[in-house]
Amino acid sequence: MNVIALNGSPRKKNWNTVSLLEHALAGAASQGAETELVNLYDLQFSGCISCFACKRVDRKVRGVCAVKDDLTPVLERIAKADALILGSPIYYGTETAAMRACFERLCFPYNPYAVDGHCEFGRVIPTALLYTMNVPEEMIDSYGYRPHFAFMQRMLSAHFGPCEVMLCTDTLQYSDYGKYESAKFDGNAKGKRREEVFPQDCQRAYELGSRMARPLAG
Ligand SMILES: Cc1cc2nc3c(=O)[nH]c(=O)nc-3n(C[C@H](O)[C@H](O)[C@H](O)COP(=O)(O)O)c2cc1C
Image 1 (tube, rainbow, N blue to C red):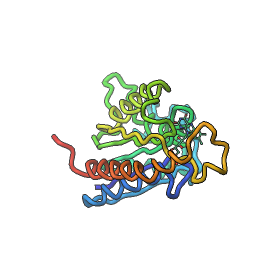
Image 2: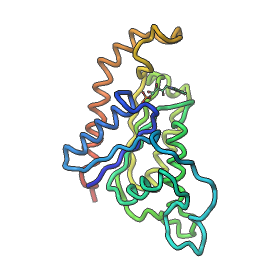
Image 3: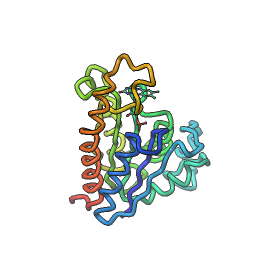
Image 4: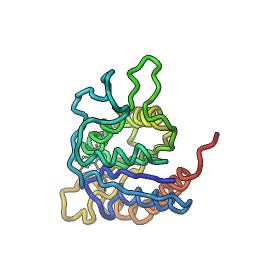
């Protein structure tokens, strides 16, 4: 069992998204899985360039993105992975630019344009989306984020396999709210939440990773 997690945050140490992903991978490792964390912001790559090489009727390989860059070996490893976790902060209501670009390259080559509509990935693996965001849970609906989360969940389920979504809300954006313009936020409350609630979020991520590393029912 091999579990790959993609970190869509440019912050790679101790911050929200990467911490959740590390806990999810620790949960998977507790079940005996081999794990890998990929920091997308360490890589130079583009999104889909709309070349449609992956849809050509005379293509030599199926389900492979023709663009060659730093994402290529990651996509090759995902093609063989047994579970996949995508983690991203919410930037302006959606994934970060790097995660979005990765998602296009990850999914489009497997996207069934054929009439029979079968997905080119060819296997069913558990997947998960971990989102971290500044807004508190009770504001997610008014900000209109849920349809996007549901869309992404459908996409991962359709391309790879059952997808769990985990939301981590009201995150700490920087460690010292006194040093940045923060009138809209209560730095003390943010700090307290980081100390008291974020460990519970990490535990939820650990349990999610542990669930993913168990064999799929049926
Ligand atoms: C450019 C930018 C845009 C952001 N947009 C949103 C947003 O639309 N909604 C939200 O809830 N948080 C937003 N945030 C806050 C981040 O989603 C939040 O702090 C997240 O937990 C950061 O993850 P990280 O600590 O892993 O980098 C934004 C942050 C940045 C830097």
